[in-house]
Amino acid sequence: MAAEVSELSIPVPWGEIRGRVWGPDHGRPVLCLHGWADNCGAFNTLIPLLPKEFRYIVVDLVGHGLSSHRPPGDFYTLPDYLMDVLRVTDALQLRKFSVIGHCMGGDIAGMFSALYPEMVDALVLLDNYGLLPTDSKEICKVVRQGMDQILQFEKKTEEEKMRVYTYEKAVERLFAANPSLSERSVHILLERGLVQVEGGFVFSRDLRVNFKNIVRISLEQSLEMQSKIQAPVLAVLTDKGFNQILSESSQSKFISTVLEGLKNRNYNVHLCICWIQHTVVTVPGDHHVHLNNPEVVAPFVADFLRTRVLSKL
Image (cartoon, rainbow, N blue to C red; front, side, top):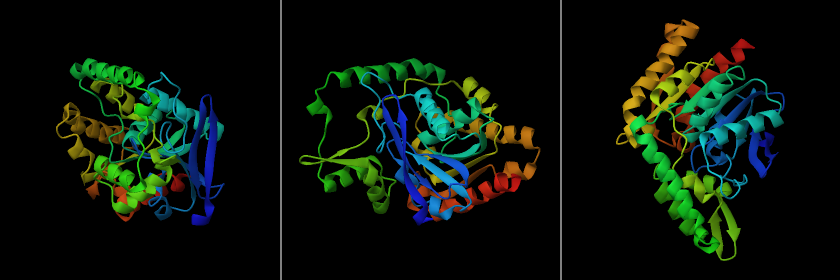
């Protein structure tokens, strides 16, 4: 499949959304959405292990990788990312496709599947729960934090905002921020994650993506949106990943409810007890296992795509 990889560029009102496309033009489309602070390189090791009958469209989410940053004064919110996905699918004339999402990309994939259920034929969540809510009592605090962060950021000079690193220091910085990454994975992400400037390198992602997301949903809203998803769902969780990251968060108490909602939804729609038992699987590894050790994740994703998409054609 290495010979069938091409760069992707889609114009948007403020610049472009960049990415890569793997596989044949006639392949069944699969949209791949990376996690927070990553870029489309996060799928570099997994895609070669997946079925060759598909065409994998992997984007740098706005503000990440080689995609343009949002205009000054804008926020990075889930609805904005959903609109970006709609722009991509419209530009590529995708009417029916599968979605694979990791971390933040899973949040985007889950909500898009709820808003446009007729467009998504299969949903894969990699170490993510799709529509994880925020405690209603915490929403005001979180929104205020996000707005205050943006205001303080806007007061900084351009020189204060731009941090220049040597390549070696950039590697150290990414390791420190993402201890779940292997050394190989760090170098993969830095291929699109760094831009060379005078004196060294700067990270290509917009620093504003680090701030709190100011758009949150409650448990009731999460379960209602979840009920709108028509596609079969595969959630591949890890034993040392997102669950541990959330263990001290107010969101952790909602995990079992959200996962149970996935199982019950599939039961009601598909009436297949065997399918319920395989909707949620847990694999050994950490939050970036799909990049560090893709052979652990690939069999589940490949089987899911074959049985839930190709077999229905």
